[in-house]
Amino acid sequence: MKQKIEQPDIFIQPNFRSPLRKAYWLAGGWIGARYIYRELFFPFLFSIGVVTFILLANFLIKSVDRLLGKGLPAHILFEFLYLNLAWIIAMSVPMAMLVAALMAYGRLAEDNEITALRSSGVSFVTILGPAIIFSSLIFIVMLLFHNYVLPEFNHRARLLASDIYRQRPGLTIEPGYFIDDIPEYSIYVKEKVGESLRKVTIYNKDAQNIQTTIYADSGFIRVEGNTVLFTLFHGQIHEIDLQGLSDYRRIDFEKHRIAIPMDNLLLERRESAIRGDREMTIAMMKTEVNRFAKERAQVEQKITQLVEQELKYQLGQSKSLPDTAIKRGQNFTSVTPLSRYDLPAFIKLLEGIRENNLKNYSPEEANIRNRRLNNLISRIKAEGSLALSYKKQVYKYKVEIQKKYAIPFACIVFVLMGAPLGVMTRRGGITVAATLSIIFFLIYYIFLIGGEELADAALISPFWAMWTPNFLLGIVGVYLIYYITYEQRILHLPRLLRFNRTNNSVNQ
Image (cartoon, rainbow, N blue to C red; front, side, top):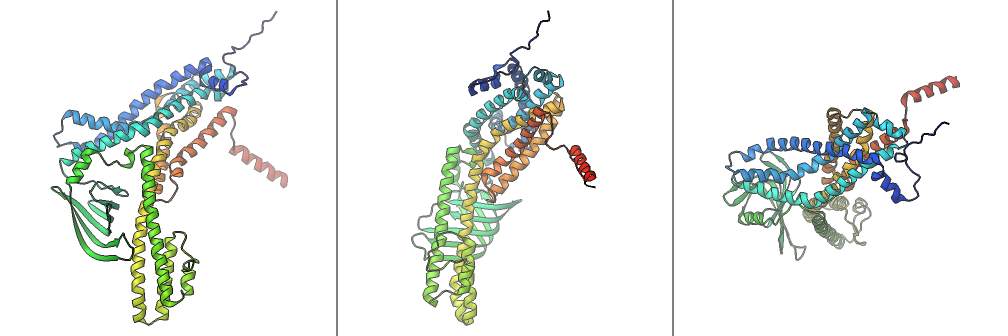
């Protein structure tokens, strides 16, 4: 009598009636899951060590010129490296997750263990389950790390770097960001070429009565003792009475110097009262987003009120607004209040009135009428630049908020892509895993950095800027999983060409 040989039921995926039992099965309810966890864990730790060492060595090479010649004790140097280790780990963990998935599933495929499991009735999704659970746990840990540990380490690292840098006085200006370290002033620099600053904006942030804003095409900064010296070229000084909008003064200059005492600056830094966007938790950044959004709304409301006042004035002078001005203003009239902020439309409206004055009045009278318009146009352009700067600040903080979610989530995305790639390459060595990891990691960070630049310039949404790399690589991962699961291609080019040739021959 022949005896029926049954496959071990521990490898056969049962017919689940409860989603919880199915989740338990995928997470580790079968004996092979614990084996896969071990295959992932040790390559993951090894990859973190290697990637962290490489990034730390690169950081040391870039920072050695700031550390040499300072006479710093050894414990300060070790503290400096320790504090900067946080952002290095934040970068190395997603890459280590990709390397671990490639090595683990590549070795399983190389030794035909994937084939043995699938022939025993275990689906590829079940084989992939432990990696997804493992990467999800890493995602939760890194999410907490990015929100609570990394900001504090970044803050302490900046303070220590300031203390080290203070031994040879100077002031670090980072283009594209508001510098709030200087007492009573906030500074925005669009570009920095060597020691030269381009497109400089300075305004007194604690003004109660008179708001002063300075714009300059270029300039430079230096520190002498306890004083910061700004030398600015080719710019304007705008002063406005905050109690009423009628008192306004503009001063054009070719060269202007500002001397600011640094005593309060040093004290504030030691007290660590100021934090950058990468030194804040999500709750802190949301507070800053609300603050800058409120200030931007106030500036936009001020511009709208100025245009409304000018329209009423022009209507009182000429009894009616010119038709060309109404057309250029895109249906804005002095009778209907301006309900929305639209700076280009405002400027077109005022320019239309100015052109109409040149056509309908004598040159002398037109110049008198247009002098007020020219000052207003220049003023709202300056205020519009300030509103745009506030908008960029809002986007900058929103980018950092989304980044705290998107980069940890990349651990799951890299597993979805790395596991099927490892099965397809059938190589469990570090060479293939490292090569593929570097390629895909570079692609990920190119999209991430490019998206951050576009979002900081307020050109695209911060959400799409940070999550587009995850979506793109996630789609690639889902396709690879589909290909491995069903052992077929969605688009098979030779088969498609052969199908086209067959159709052509039939049509002929």
